[in-house]
Amino acid sequence: MAGVSSVSLATVREGLESRLAGANLALAEDLFGVLAILDSNAGLRRALTDPSRTGKDKAVLVDQLIAGRVSPEAAGVVRDLVGERWANARDIGDALETLAATVVISVAEQGSGVEGLEQLENELYSFIQVVGSDHALQRALSEAQASPESKVTLGLKLVPNAGPASRLLITQAVRSPRGLKPAALVGRFLELVAARQQRWIADVSVTRPLTASQFERLEAGLNAMYGRQLKVNVKVDPALIGGVRVSVGDEMVDSTVVTRLSELRRKLAG
Image (cartoon, rainbow, N blue to C red; front, side):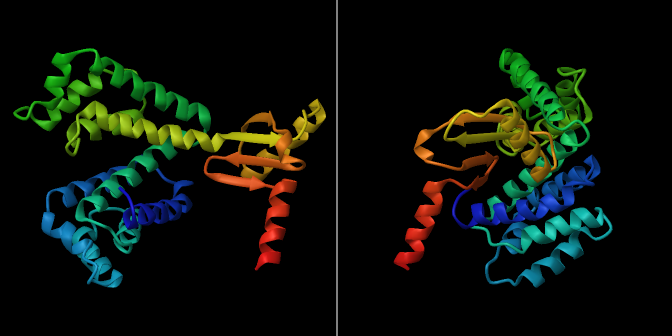
């Protein structure tokens, strides 16, 4: 996914963040259910990605399609999705799959934070390892003549101790791999887990080594700023000249002298 679709996905994912605090797996199940509807109806996908239709028109179509069938929260996510622009009809389904998986990952994160994400990561990786080492399993999980439910039953037997979040993602990958091998789709979900984990890691660059008390103040300040217990990695970079640069996930906080001088030069040049 690239271009306008990539921008649209980023916009909708940003909006989804405000819904994640109280999200549960039922929301993800609803979104995966809507995805199944989209995947089964090419005409509907074209209608929802038609640039000549207004966002309001598409929202009405969505309401007619899913009203009473999913939660209001799920309907809101889908309305946000169809209100954006998509380069092709396939992209809207890929985006919805990403949003649903993000909800599942967020649920795993709730309560136990990064430990929940690590558990999810380990369970998904275990599935990939087991399937990847057995060609017979690969064929069984991709067998066109087998029923989706029988394949789901087999897939879940491979990770008997997996938690609810892992079981939902594995079930989705086995039941509806959407053109991929089930293990490959679980691998994509695993990439989303890894990206979510980066929100718990702060990479800090400073001009000189920090004392123990300076590190404690830095750690406490970052934890207060982000509202969670971060793992703080500190690197000394004399090229910064002064100040501190902090990166948490995709977010950058930069107060270095070099940056301030560059900003001043831009203002003077402008």
